[in-house]
Length: 104
Length: 253
Image (tube, rainbow over all chains, first blue to last red; front, side):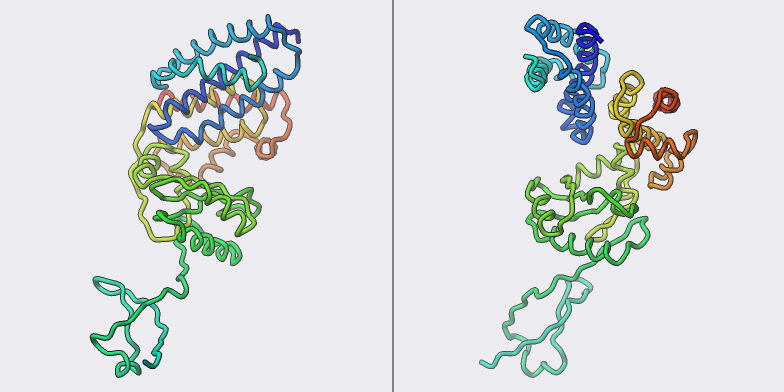
């Protein structure tokens, strides 16, 4: 697979992982969401494998950031049952995840 | 003054628990005398809920775990749940602790003391009640347990649509993304638990396992439980079951 496909796959997985993570943070006071933060970790592990496959230049990193923002926003809009605070923490969670994957 | 000592078990009284002065000592310790009562050995007891008796080793271990836990400040009760109760080989011992505050040291102290792997979750009484009412996974966890003190957790279930939708997110993702096979196993189990919860049926392990075995070969089920490699055909089969269960749950809530 080429870089473009890897970027697509990486942002697909990462947007889902972050949706789980944000859901578990936002819903934390409601119910036992911490247990389900594990879902985010499981997808994140798969994301790491793709992130390690390529040498990403600054243009690629910019593309990943841009695509991830679009996909994650869509994911969060679709999941109405995740509290509204989700959009407030979206930016910070994207930055943290990209930093963790050394894609910032 | 001559030292007067006796050892007696605390007995249950109608209003208060009590210690009786032995008959042979009634002339030595009399009404109005000042005495001191000291705890010498904690009475260890465990209560089984919907659970057959454990092996001698496991029961001994469980009693000692409860005894150790009750020495922590603020712990009101504790429960042993999960695979320790029904599997011969278990990864870790899952313990739910009822406490007003979280104590991160419990896990470390128990691990050092018993040389076993522990997974500790702390809840307040109110939070536990809410979870047993609304969360199918936690409700299933508490369908079988051991506890340090007798308690009634027969709370009525209550369907929280938002929470069920939250739980469906991962199985839905698994229809589109490929992860290791154990994750499919865990989510199949999650879906079967949600189904049984919505049908108001028993959520104990044999019941869930019975549902898991429907529509899937034993060998494939064993393979994904052990995180084995699966081929495209097997993945398709699993996804079909997941898809149908999601459809059923969504229609039901």
